[in-house]
Image (tube, rainbow, N blue to C red; front, top):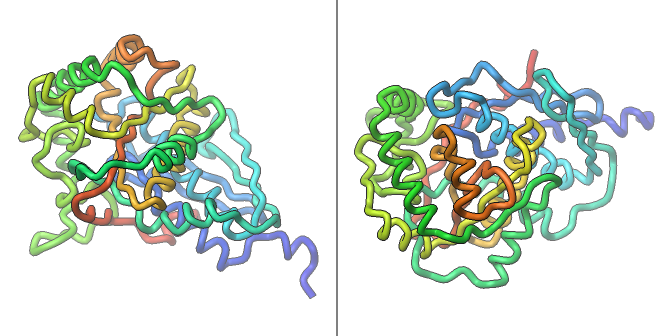
Length: 325
Protein backbone atom coordinates (compact mmCIF):
# COMPACT_ATOMS: atom_id res chain seq x y z
CA UNK A 1 0.00 0.00 0.00
CA UNK A 2 1.29 3.47 -0.96
CA UNK A 3 1.85 5.93 1.85
CA UNK A 4 0.32 9.41 1.72
CA UNK A 5 3.76 10.82 0.91
CA UNK A 6 4.11 8.43 -2.04
CA UNK A 7 0.63 9.37 -3.26
CA UNK A 8 1.59 13.04 -3.22
CA UNK A 9 4.87 12.61 -5.12
CA UNK A 10 4.83 13.08 -8.86
CA UNK A 11 4.86 9.75 -10.70
CA UNK A 12 7.20 9.15 -13.67
CA UNK A 13 4.23 9.32 -16.06
CA UNK A 14 3.24 12.70 -14.60
CA UNK A 15 6.78 14.00 -14.87
CA UNK A 16 6.78 13.02 -18.55
CA UNK A 17 3.57 15.02 -19.15
CA UNK A 18 5.05 18.06 -17.41
CA UNK A 19 8.34 17.83 -19.33
CA UNK A 20 6.59 17.48 -22.68
CA UNK A 21 4.37 20.49 -22.00
CA UNK A 22 7.30 22.61 -20.86
CA UNK A 23 9.39 21.61 -23.87
CA UNK A 24 6.74 23.01 -26.22
CA UNK A 25 6.79 26.52 -24.75
CA UNK A 26 7.80 29.38 -27.04
CA UNK A 27 11.25 30.90 -26.52
CA UNK A 28 13.49 33.55 -28.01
CA UNK A 29 15.08 32.14 -31.20
CA UNK A 30 13.70 28.78 -30.00
CA UNK A 31 16.66 28.51 -27.63
CA UNK A 32 14.60 26.61 -25.00
CA UNK A 33 16.62 28.15 -22.14
CA UNK A 34 15.26 26.02 -19.31
CA UNK A 35 15.55 22.77 -17.42
CA UNK A 36 13.39 21.23 -14.70
CA UNK A 37 14.15 19.40 -11.47
CA UNK A 38 11.53 17.33 -9.66
CA UNK A 39 11.61 17.03 -5.88
CA UNK A 40 8.72 14.93 -4.56
CA UNK A 41 5.73 17.09 -5.62
CA UNK A 42 7.77 20.24 -6.33
CA UNK A 43 9.12 21.18 -9.74
CA UNK A 44 11.98 23.65 -10.03
CA UNK A 45 12.23 25.68 -13.23
CA UNK A 46 15.93 26.26 -13.88
CA UNK A 47 17.28 28.95 -16.19
CA UNK A 48 19.98 27.86 -18.63
CA UNK A 49 21.98 31.09 -18.47
CA UNK A 50 24.60 29.54 -20.78
CA UNK A 51 22.15 29.98 -23.66
CA UNK A 52 23.06 33.55 -24.56
CA UNK A 53 22.11 35.88 -27.41
CA UNK A 54 24.47 38.84 -26.86
CA UNK A 55 23.29 40.75 -29.93
CA UNK A 56 19.54 40.16 -29.67
CA UNK A 57 19.15 39.82 -25.91
CA UNK A 58 22.21 41.34 -24.21
CA UNK A 59 20.57 41.59 -20.77
CA UNK A 60 18.92 38.16 -20.87
CA UNK A 61 15.44 39.68 -20.59
CA UNK A 62 13.94 37.59 -23.39
CA UNK A 63 15.54 34.51 -21.89
CA UNK A 64 13.65 35.16 -18.66
CA UNK A 65 10.43 35.93 -20.56
CA UNK A 66 10.91 32.55 -22.27
CA UNK A 67 11.28 30.86 -18.88
CA UNK A 68 7.98 32.52 -17.93
CA UNK A 69 6.34 30.88 -20.94
CA UNK A 70 7.73 27.50 -19.84
CA UNK A 71 6.34 28.15 -16.36
CA UNK A 72 2.83 28.77 -17.76
CA UNK A 73 2.99 25.50 -19.73
CA UNK A 74 4.19 23.67 -16.62
CA UNK A 75 1.36 25.08 -14.50
CA UNK A 76 -1.22 24.25 -17.18
CA UNK A 77 -0.04 20.65 -17.43
CA UNK A 78 -0.02 20.24 -13.66
CA UNK A 79 -3.65 21.34 -13.48
CA UNK A 80 -4.63 18.75 -16.10
CA UNK A 81 -2.98 16.14 -13.88
CA UNK A 82 -5.48 17.20 -11.18
CA UNK A 83 -2.77 19.00 -9.24
CA UNK A 84 -3.42 22.20 -7.32
CA UNK A 85 -0.49 24.52 -7.95
CA UNK A 86 1.14 27.29 -6.01
CA UNK A 87 4.34 28.92 -7.21
CA UNK A 88 7.22 30.52 -5.33
CA UNK A 89 9.92 32.71 -6.83
CA UNK A 90 13.47 32.66 -5.40
CA UNK A 91 15.09 36.10 -5.33
CA UNK A 92 18.18 34.91 -7.18
CA UNK A 93 20.04 31.89 -8.48
CA UNK A 94 19.45 29.48 -11.34
CA UNK A 95 16.06 28.32 -10.00
CA UNK A 96 13.68 31.04 -11.18
CA UNK A 97 10.44 29.46 -9.92
CA UNK A 98 9.21 26.40 -8.04
CA UNK A 99 5.78 24.94 -8.75
CA UNK A 100 4.30 23.10 -5.79
CA UNK A 101 1.93 20.53 -7.29
CA UNK A 102 -0.23 18.93 -4.62
CA UNK A 103 -3.19 16.62 -5.37
CA UNK A 104 -6.21 18.76 -6.19
CA UNK A 105 -9.39 18.98 -8.24
CA UNK A 106 -10.12 18.19 -11.86
CA UNK A 107 -9.33 20.93 -14.42
CA UNK A 108 -12.15 22.97 -15.94
CA UNK A 109 -13.00 23.11 -19.64
CA UNK A 110 -10.83 26.16 -20.33
CA UNK A 111 -7.79 24.56 -18.68
CA UNK A 112 -8.25 21.38 -20.70
CA UNK A 113 -8.61 23.34 -23.93
CA UNK A 114 -5.40 25.28 -23.29
CA UNK A 115 -3.51 22.11 -22.41
CA UNK A 116 -4.56 20.43 -25.66
CA UNK A 117 -3.50 23.56 -27.54
CA UNK A 118 0.12 23.16 -26.37
CA UNK A 119 1.00 20.70 -29.13
CA UNK A 120 -0.73 22.79 -31.82
CA UNK A 121 0.76 26.17 -30.96
CA UNK A 122 3.15 27.56 -33.59
CA UNK A 123 4.86 30.87 -34.29
CA UNK A 124 2.96 32.31 -37.26
CA UNK A 125 5.48 34.68 -38.89
CA UNK A 126 3.18 35.48 -41.78
CA UNK A 127 0.29 37.78 -42.57
CA UNK A 128 -3.09 36.77 -41.21
CA UNK A 129 -6.17 36.24 -43.35
CA UNK A 130 -8.86 38.89 -43.71
CA UNK A 131 -11.32 36.73 -41.76
CA UNK A 132 -12.41 38.78 -38.74
CA UNK A 133 -11.79 37.59 -35.19
CA UNK A 134 -15.07 37.58 -33.29
CA UNK A 135 -15.56 39.90 -30.33
CA UNK A 136 -16.09 36.85 -28.12
CA UNK A 137 -12.71 35.45 -29.12
CA UNK A 138 -11.01 38.83 -28.75
CA UNK A 139 -12.32 39.22 -25.21
CA UNK A 140 -11.34 35.68 -24.25
CA UNK A 141 -7.82 36.05 -25.65
CA UNK A 142 -7.32 39.40 -23.93
CA UNK A 143 -8.55 38.02 -20.60
CA UNK A 144 -6.49 34.81 -20.68
CA UNK A 145 -3.18 36.39 -19.77
CA UNK A 146 -4.17 37.60 -16.33
CA UNK A 147 -1.01 37.65 -14.25
CA UNK A 148 0.04 39.59 -11.17
CA UNK A 149 2.10 42.68 -12.05
CA UNK A 150 1.34 42.39 -15.80
CA UNK A 151 -1.07 44.48 -17.86
CA UNK A 152 -2.05 43.33 -21.39
CA UNK A 153 -3.35 46.26 -23.43
CA UNK A 154 -4.58 46.82 -26.96
CA UNK A 155 -2.21 49.51 -28.24
CA UNK A 156 -3.44 52.87 -29.46
CA UNK A 157 -1.60 55.39 -31.67
CA UNK A 158 -0.59 52.76 -34.22
CA UNK A 159 0.97 55.42 -36.41
CA UNK A 160 3.58 55.94 -33.70
CA UNK A 161 4.09 52.19 -33.39
CA UNK A 162 4.49 51.84 -37.17
CA UNK A 163 7.10 54.60 -37.31
CA UNK A 164 9.09 53.05 -34.47
CA UNK A 165 8.95 49.54 -35.92
CA UNK A 166 10.17 50.90 -39.25
CA UNK A 167 13.11 52.53 -37.48
CA UNK A 168 13.89 49.27 -35.66
CA UNK A 169 13.81 47.30 -38.92
CA UNK A 170 16.38 49.57 -40.52
CA UNK A 171 18.60 49.39 -37.43
CA UNK A 172 18.63 45.58 -37.22
CA UNK A 173 19.07 45.10 -40.97
CA UNK A 174 22.26 47.17 -40.78
CA UNK A 175 23.67 45.42 -37.69
CA UNK A 176 26.20 42.78 -38.85
CA UNK A 177 26.60 41.21 -35.39
CA UNK A 178 22.86 40.76 -35.03
CA UNK A 179 22.59 39.24 -38.51
CA UNK A 180 25.41 36.77 -37.81
CA UNK A 181 23.72 35.70 -34.59
CA UNK A 182 20.34 35.23 -36.29
CA UNK A 183 21.92 33.12 -39.03
CA UNK A 184 23.59 30.97 -36.38
CA UNK A 185 20.20 30.33 -34.77
CA UNK A 186 18.37 29.60 -38.04
CA UNK A 187 17.69 25.87 -38.29
CA UNK A 188 17.46 23.95 -41.55
CA UNK A 189 14.83 21.39 -40.60
CA UNK A 190 13.46 20.29 -43.98
CA UNK A 191 14.75 19.24 -47.39
CA UNK A 192 18.20 18.14 -48.52
CA UNK A 193 19.97 20.58 -46.19
CA UNK A 194 18.17 19.47 -43.02
CA UNK A 195 20.63 19.49 -40.14
CA UNK A 196 18.75 17.51 -37.50
CA UNK A 197 18.54 20.62 -35.35
CA UNK A 198 17.14 20.43 -31.82
CA UNK A 199 16.68 24.19 -31.41
CA UNK A 200 16.73 27.39 -33.46
CA UNK A 201 14.18 29.08 -35.71
CA UNK A 202 13.05 26.90 -38.64
CA UNK A 203 14.21 28.43 -41.91
CA UNK A 204 10.80 27.66 -43.38
CA UNK A 205 9.21 29.93 -40.78
CA UNK A 206 11.20 32.97 -41.93
CA UNK A 207 9.46 34.43 -44.96
CA UNK A 208 10.08 37.54 -47.03
CA UNK A 209 7.45 39.68 -45.31
CA UNK A 210 8.09 42.93 -43.47
CA UNK A 211 7.22 43.67 -39.87
CA UNK A 212 4.94 42.95 -38.12
CA UNK A 213 4.59 39.61 -39.93
CA UNK A 214 8.32 38.94 -40.18
CA UNK A 215 8.89 38.96 -36.43
CA UNK A 216 12.65 38.70 -36.99
CA UNK A 217 14.52 41.13 -39.25
CA UNK A 218 17.00 39.70 -41.75
CA UNK A 219 19.11 41.55 -44.31
CA UNK A 220 16.45 40.98 -46.97
CA UNK A 221 13.49 42.00 -44.80
CA UNK A 222 11.70 44.83 -46.63
CA UNK A 223 11.03 48.16 -44.94
CA UNK A 224 7.64 49.57 -45.96
CA UNK A 225 6.95 53.26 -45.51
CA UNK A 226 5.42 54.26 -42.17
CA UNK A 227 1.91 54.71 -43.59
CA UNK A 228 1.85 51.22 -45.13
CA UNK A 229 3.23 49.59 -41.98
CA UNK A 230 0.63 51.44 -39.89
CA UNK A 231 -2.14 50.19 -42.17
CA UNK A 232 -0.91 46.63 -41.71
CA UNK A 233 -0.85 47.05 -37.94
CA UNK A 234 -4.42 48.37 -38.03
CA UNK A 235 -5.52 45.20 -39.86
CA UNK A 236 -4.14 42.95 -37.08
CA UNK A 237 -5.02 42.22 -33.47
CA UNK A 238 -2.27 43.25 -31.06
CA UNK A 239 -1.67 43.01 -27.32
CA UNK A 240 1.25 44.63 -25.52
CA UNK A 241 2.30 43.00 -22.24
CA UNK A 242 3.56 45.69 -19.88
CA UNK A 243 5.05 45.68 -16.41
CA UNK A 244 5.65 48.53 -13.99
CA UNK A 245 9.29 47.62 -13.46
CA UNK A 246 12.00 45.49 -15.03
CA UNK A 247 12.67 42.79 -12.43
CA UNK A 248 13.21 39.09 -13.01
CA UNK A 249 9.81 38.36 -11.47
CA UNK A 250 8.13 40.78 -13.87
CA UNK A 251 9.89 39.30 -16.89
CA UNK A 252 8.69 35.84 -15.82
CA UNK A 253 5.15 37.12 -15.35
CA UNK A 254 5.10 38.79 -18.77
CA UNK A 255 6.22 35.54 -20.42
CA UNK A 256 3.67 33.48 -18.50
CA UNK A 257 0.84 35.88 -19.31
CA UNK A 258 1.71 35.94 -23.00
CA UNK A 259 1.99 32.13 -23.14
CA UNK A 260 -1.47 31.67 -21.61
CA UNK A 261 -2.90 34.20 -24.05
CA UNK A 262 -1.25 32.34 -26.93
CA UNK A 263 -2.68 29.00 -25.78
CA UNK A 264 -6.15 30.54 -25.51
CA UNK A 265 -5.83 31.90 -29.05
CA UNK A 266 -4.66 28.50 -30.32
CA UNK A 267 -7.52 26.72 -28.54
CA UNK A 268 -9.92 29.03 -30.40
CA UNK A 269 -8.46 28.19 -33.80
CA UNK A 270 -6.33 31.32 -34.05
CA UNK A 271 -2.64 31.74 -34.84
CA UNK A 272 -0.15 34.03 -33.13
CA UNK A 273 3.42 35.24 -32.89
CA UNK A 274 5.41 37.69 -30.80
CA UNK A 275 7.59 40.72 -31.40
CA UNK A 276 10.39 41.40 -28.92
CA UNK A 277 13.31 42.23 -31.20
CA UNK A 278 12.59 45.99 -31.51
CA UNK A 279 12.24 46.27 -27.72
CA UNK A 280 15.99 45.71 -27.31
CA UNK A 281 17.08 48.90 -29.04
CA UNK A 282 18.46 51.33 -26.48
CA UNK A 283 15.66 53.52 -25.13
CA UNK A 284 13.06 51.99 -27.45
CA UNK A 285 10.74 50.69 -24.73
CA UNK A 286 10.69 53.93 -22.79
CA UNK A 287 9.87 55.99 -25.89
CA UNK A 288 7.27 53.45 -27.02
CA UNK A 289 5.59 53.52 -23.61
CA UNK A 290 5.37 57.30 -23.79
CA UNK A 291 4.15 57.56 -27.38
CA UNK A 292 1.56 54.79 -27.03
CA UNK A 293 0.47 55.90 -23.55
CA UNK A 294 1.21 52.43 -22.17
CA UNK A 295 0.69 51.64 -18.45
CA UNK A 296 4.27 50.41 -18.02
CA UNK A 297 7.33 49.07 -19.80
CA UNK A 298 6.48 46.90 -22.84
CA UNK A 299 7.99 43.41 -22.54
CA UNK A 300 6.25 41.52 -25.38
CA UNK A 301 4.08 42.47 -28.35
CA UNK A 302 1.67 39.65 -29.25
CA UNK A 303 -0.15 39.54 -32.59
CA UNK A 304 -2.92 37.10 -33.48
CA UNK A 305 -5.55 36.30 -36.08
CA UNK A 306 -6.67 33.62 -38.53
CA UNK A 307 -3.83 31.95 -40.40
CA UNK A 308 -3.67 31.59 -44.18
CA UNK A 309 -1.57 28.42 -43.98
CA UNK A 310 -0.16 26.18 -41.22
CA UNK A 311 3.15 27.28 -39.72
CA UNK A 312 6.00 24.74 -39.59
CA UNK A 313 6.82 23.18 -36.24
CA UNK A 314 10.00 24.19 -34.43
CA UNK A 315 12.62 21.59 -33.48
CA UNK A 316 12.76 20.54 -29.85
CA UNK A 317 15.48 19.17 -27.63
CA UNK A 318 14.98 15.62 -26.28
CA UNK A 319 12.90 15.46 -23.11
CA UNK A 320 15.80 13.80 -21.30
CA UNK A 321 17.79 17.02 -21.72
CA UNK A 322 15.26 18.88 -19.58
CA UNK A 323 16.07 16.90 -16.45
CA UNK A 324 19.48 17.40 -14.76
CA UNK A 325 21.46 14.29 -13.90
